[in-house]
Image (cartoon, rainbow, N blue to C red):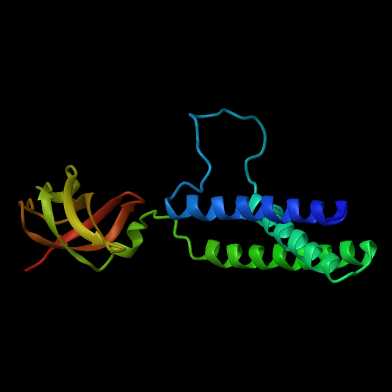
Length: 184
């Protein structure tokens, strides 16, 4: 076995093992970065975030394509310069394919942040009594974005709204507080 073939085999085998390890870790939910506490930083924080074309996954995909294409090309007697060029092209196709798949999956993500504007018009029930005329906050239990949540609420009604009473959300007082009216 020639040195070139050994090198391409080593690249192909090692990168494939890393790819398999990534897939196994992903199946068990261990494929994300760990955080260790908080960090204070100076300077701008308005980075675009998200995916980058050069990531561990895309680079590993490049080397899988590069290594195994090199093995096949050398075993088919392609000259070394042609093998390297072909392997680099196939590796680049692998890289862009994995990047495209990851970008598509990344778009499916949901932040999970509740937008209480989506509660306007919905009906909930009083969890803690709501004082009349915005004298103080109470709490209601309401389904927002598929999640049952307890939210602080005020009312403009002239009388206190008691526990278990049904209310309709009419507006937001602030991003975390609802304005409700009694039903009936």
